[in-house]
Image (tube, rainbow, N blue to C red):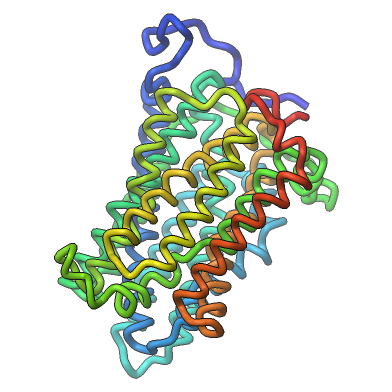
Length: 435
């Protein structure tokens, strides 16, 4: 099957291409991509603001790491229930309209979270209800957003677009938590109103994105069509190996859900070394992985990874696990932040390889369904990983839970080297997904 997108034909050399064929910021020459990029920064920034503010408020109110994990579970459950529907919708309807409606719903859910937390008489479970609404909207937004990106730039600029788009997410990953910590300290629950405003603005920007026309599927809905994304991933071992590696590595090694507890308990005595305490220290720690990812993302945007992509991805996930172990063992805020920087940097390489493999190798009329399944893996590694972290911390204690998770990540890399030899041997991004 070939892509139906009208903008995937090879394009001649342009001023954005060096003599050696390297494209310097090629994706940034396209206005539609620039609007998409800015909207992503606003949307992901709002998500990070909510994560910091809601996590701190819940832990401050209940003192329970389990409740921190339940936030991730509440956001993840809608993704599981809707995975077969969301991708099909992204392939049949206008992806820009889907994104706009979804971020509007997310804004409402974020405002609801703030109202519940600001009202001591309201039960905490209403926060989880609002988060589930937020997660349901994200379940529809994510595949539509991922599938829209290849329609905004020529194929030759797509690896550059992936690196820049991922960097945008990481910019939000740095500024959002830091801003969320500062705003929560100053505005308290009004911070959720700021996040909702960011989301509404992002929706308006996406609605104005001009993307090339594409062939929209009008065939009757069938189980064969709905399950197309699952079938595609199952038949492509490199893609399956890449996204499942991310799933289990971050599921085990992700410790972001525990950052409120770590910032208040494990690092509270030495927080003065950085001159930060409370939610502001949490904001810095939450943003540190994004800072490391930005540096790597900018590097990949200029010098994309071209050879030995499989071994490099596996090595980076292994380093992610080792950095997680260091993070769990240290009581120094400075070493903790450095470990988080390393985790974000190597995770960016994994994101770049996975997204490029999935999007370049998937026909346009299937990108929504494949992106939905891929997004479920990513959501499982993030939101379900937060629940796993909270549950493990309740059983083993916060420090030991982080260390055990890092060890598990290293073990997963070893197993994937054995179970997915095609991924271990993958050399180039272009065409690898078709192996």
